[in-house]
Image (cartoon, rainbow, N blue to C red; front, side, top):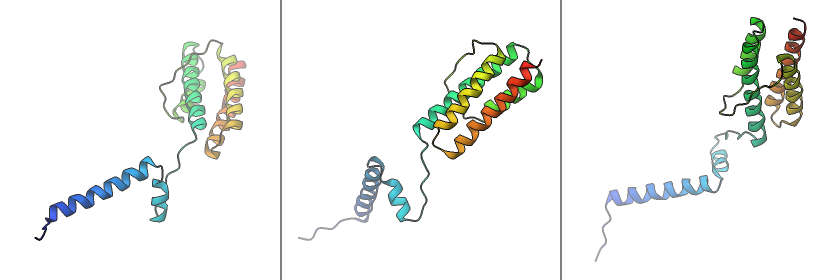
Length: 145
């Protein structure tokens, strides 16, 4: 007796093997290695600490914008703070600023400096250091008004 297997069964079995292999690679966190063998460069995953730093920076930047608007800060100051916030990834995290704008900007500048020293990604280090410098300038501008 001869067993005859249809083409559909063979194709379905082959697809099942490929799907199972792909799932094993993903679950086993070996997909990057498989892609590297095929010549496809894997996309780097951001460091979890860097994600946390960026989220905190965005939440504080949004709070500074809110404080500047509430304090009727000069339009240039509000524009700079908005641009800084827009340059960071959006987050669901929120915070408030209890201090006056000058004190809040000074504290945020110091926090971004410290965050830059803690960050792993060179790109994030540059962004956080730039934010710190920009906030220091905003602090001086607000203090002089």
